[in-house]
Each structure stands twice: as C-alpha cells, then as structure tokens.
Length: 261
Ligand SMILES: C[S@@+](CC[C@H](N)C(=O)[O-])C[C@H]1O[C@@H](n2cnc3c(N)ncnc32)[C@H](O)[C@@H]1O
Image (tube, rainbow, N blue to C red):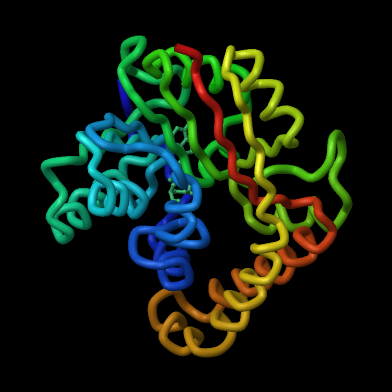
C-alpha cells in the first residue's frame, strides 16, 4: 500500500531547485549530466527503471533523447509523482513513461523486469545501500546495467563539523555513505565491472556559479515565488555546501555496474 506522507521536497524547494537546475530537475547538471551517466550504453528498445524520479526531468529526457522502449519513474513522494505526468505530456513522451508512487523498501517489481536501472541523486535518501544494491540486481535482467549519480560522503565515520552543519542546514533525510560502501554493496550484490567516477571537482565550480545566480540574476524573481526568508536560507545552504565540497566531504559521484549474464 502506498501513502502520501513522504514529502521532504515541498513546492518552495522544488521551485527553487528547478530555477537553478532546470525544468523537471531536482539535482545539478541537467540533461548533460544524465547523458554523462548513460555515456556509451546502448539504450535501443530497453526498459528502464528510474529510482527517485522526483519531478521527472530525467525520465522525460531519457524517453525523448534515447530510443528506449519504456521508462518507469518511481518516487515515494505522491506530490512529486502527481506533477510528472504534465511534463511528460508537454514533451510528447507520455506513451513511453509510467510514473508510480512506491513505498520505501523493496522495489515492487518481479525479478528480471528491467534492462537498465538508473537513479540521479536519490539513493542518498536510502540508508541501506547493500539492501538496495541487492534489490536492483534482482529486478535487472541478466546482463542488465545499473547507472547512477549520487551524493557520496568523502569520509568514513564522522563528518567534519562543517559537513555536519551543511547536512543539518539541508534538513533532508540523508543516508550518506562513502564510495567504499557503495562499491562493497554493488560487488556484494554480484555486480561486476563496478566503476565509481568522482564529480567533486566539476561540482565545486558549478556550485559557485549556482550560488552566484541565486544571489544575483534569479534573486528578485525567486523572492516573489518562494519568499526572501526561504531564499536567503537556501543561499546559506549553498555556502555551507561549497565548504563541504571544498573539504572533499561531499562528493557527487557517478556509479556504473553490470549484472553478469
Ligand atoms: C534530490 S531528488 C532527485 C530527483 C530526480 N532524480 C532528479 O535528479 O531531479 C531525490 C528524490 O528521491 C526520492 N526518494 C527518497 N527516498 C526514496 C526511495 N526510498 N525510493 C524512491 N525515491 C525516493 C525523493 O522523494 C526525491 O524525489
């Protein structure tokens, strides 16, 4: 049974994130980052599962720009899922995408359902990486691929006080883990050819320009949408995030792994 109690990303936050990151995106880099996550993969006639689809920008891009057979975007937040359909319709890809609200926990699909499982910056919210990796492997067909990006911890154990301050300011339910934990989870689940690509250097630069836009060219417009107090708080979150990025504590990362044939 699903419910609509999972609402961490409210309308103000999603409006601000879309202003910075583009229509349908709640994570940085937009369609270029999605293309980088999928680089070199053959998506022809493939069935794709997207874990944590948010507002559906990733799914609309995949369904528009790649010759996939079908995309299923899932999210625990009913409010977000309800908004996804309009974007798919606007971009004429409704026939290729199914959006579904799910409960946290095991993926509600049979073994071997998908050719590709993707996720963009959502697994941070799922604390048990080993359980998730096992479940992703289960729903993939033999030879299927897992391709994702996520926010990783650049530390084992305790964060620096600055990283802790950033996480507290976000106020979101984060289950941060290190690259070692992700690699171990994927290999323990039977994946092979696990590739972990760090994106910290890219995002250290990008985050600075986003912060500049929030305090500059977007500021007046966004105050009318989300209010000055909320906007100023989010600019402060960006400042704290930039420190965490500079310290190497917060590490945007791409992940790729293959389920053996
Ligand atoms: C940072 S947003 C990213 C959304 C989207 N992938 C994007 O890049 O725009 C993280 C998303 O993960 C979702 N989420 C959190 N826990 C989840 C879970 N256990 N299963 C599926 N989605 C989850 C949240 O509701 C949110 O929409």
